[in-house]
Image (cartoon, one colour):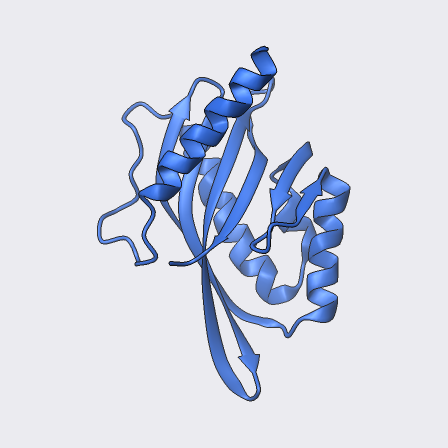
Length: 164
C-alpha cells in the first residue's frame, strides 16, 4: 500500500510540474525554495554542466555519474532504461549511432523539495550537424533526485518529454 501511495504521489507531482512547463526559455532565474540544501543545488549544477561538456565529447562516465545504481531513465520516445548499466549502454549506443553533439544546453527551471526527494523541472537542447546544417532540438525533463545516506544527492528517476 505504501509503495502504491508513493508511486501515485510521484506521478501526481510530475504531472503538476510538467503541466506548468513551457517550451520557452525561462524569463526569470531558476526557482528554488528558500532554505534548499546547498548540496542539492551543487549536485544539480554540476550534473548539468558535466552533462553539457560530456555530450560534446561523447563521454559517458560524467553523464551517468550522478545516477543511483537503481535509477530509471525514460527517454523521449517512452523507452524505459532500468539501472545504471542500462542507462550507461543507452548513452554508448547514442554516441555510436547518432551524429555528434556540437553543443548541449541544460536549463534547470524549477526545483521542488519534499524531504529526501527533490523534483527538478527544466529543458535541454542538443545542436547537431544534420545534412550539413546545424539543427537544435529541445526537450523538457523532470529529474527526481534522492538524498543518499551520505547526504549526497543522486538521480533516482529522469523523464524526458518533447518540447511543446
